[in-house]
Length: 134
Image 1: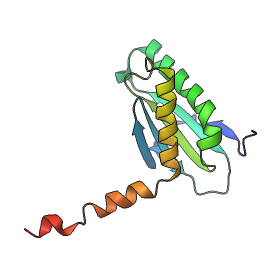
Image 2 (image 1 turned 135 degrees about the vertical axis):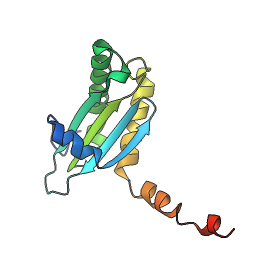
Image 3 (image 1 turned 60 degrees about the vertical axis):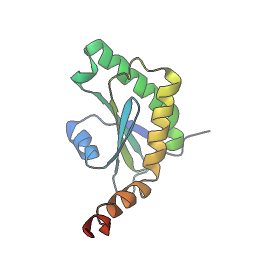
């Protein structure tokens, strides 16, 4: 199946910081952030990062390589055109079984494809009058 959009890489710090202002989803060994660019461009841009908490340079690079391969496999089917995605490695990303890592990335991308349900629940929770009746 040919992908309906072009996939590019995020490369500059401002692009990563902009994506951090979007919605995010943590699943197992990965956090995925998504920013809807609100432009007419159908390109999907992907970025990958790992903090020093993940481990030394060898482990961080291994974690990012695994995330790149998982994104290359799943993004054509699950990513939304016109969005920027940042995949953040967590502790254990480098050692997680491949099937479970793919499941983590797939569930995060699926959840981010329909972000309306999560904020709606969060928005209604604090406004509940249950705690104010006492």
